Length: 460
Image (cartoon, rainbow, N blue to C red):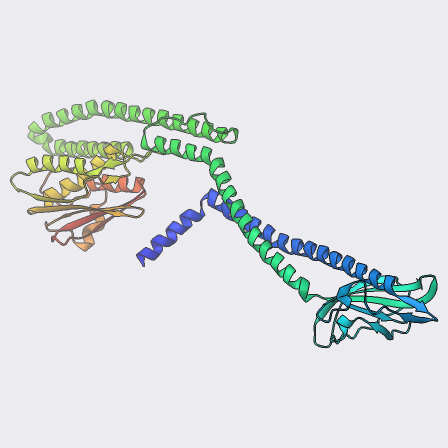
């Protein structure tokens, strides 16, 4: 089921390609054009073929007219025709002569075996070219010409020449097959040229995409001006956005540093006053209340500073290797919790990367690992599972775990279930903010090791 969803998602991504859409549209239009062109070319060829047949039959009819004689009002035809095809029994060229009433008065030897039932109409039309069918369903081309004067003698005859259409049907079928073949080849060549043209035309977009990848990865600061005129407005707008974001982040970072520096001194002064007041027994309760408020203010300031400084950037996208950060953090935590002798199992590919800024990734891993080291008995396991559209980071421990009814509290700011160890209770809240800023998902489940299992789902 998961593979099917992945395939469907890949197909959707490919269908969103502008080049693929243009290629599909161009291919559809080219195929439609070829389909419309085919019957047009076949019709033109058929018209040319029928015109050729008509001219040939007209020439044969002229041969009959030249051979005919009128003697004492009767038609006389020679025993041997000038065109030998009329005398050949195997010939498909047929000749007939009809009188004014449509009675057959002469037929060629080639037509003796044919059962053609044709009745001309002597109505002064001159000549006509038609198709007819005999009793067996065989189709013929028919050329019918009316003769009023034959060698100076008045007469009224219909000279008819015929030829079966099957002789030309094979020629037409061969042409139709060749037409389909060459149109198919032309369509393939056209599609290849269209793909080449679209690929060449989209080179500028591919170059722009490469520059955007460079901006996201942090290898370049701005987009170049080496783009087509139609894209310059877009690239200029993106450059202004990048410059504005960079200046805003610098101002934001400077403001946070100024805020932290300006609050540090007053809080230190207040803390010193509280310690002085706590020496006097009558002021001890007020001093403890003031110390609690100062600690709460420090906690809130620290949380907001961390939360603001670790937000995901707008256009710039970083990718950091996970293994070096994990290895360094585990080494540091091993020294802090040396008495526990924690066994850290790192099931992370050495060259795996996560789409996150280094500071944010360090804060996320540091908080989750410190939490696991602090609450575990002896074992901590970190695993990273690559996914088609991102990765799944899992951090587990063999500690007491977190009850189901308390899991939502753990992720809230300032909430801590472990009251025996010092801390501000904002670590997991910062982790959740980082994950949300990168449009990921954070979940808390039971671990196979017996303790808590934090799962971070991140998307590319």
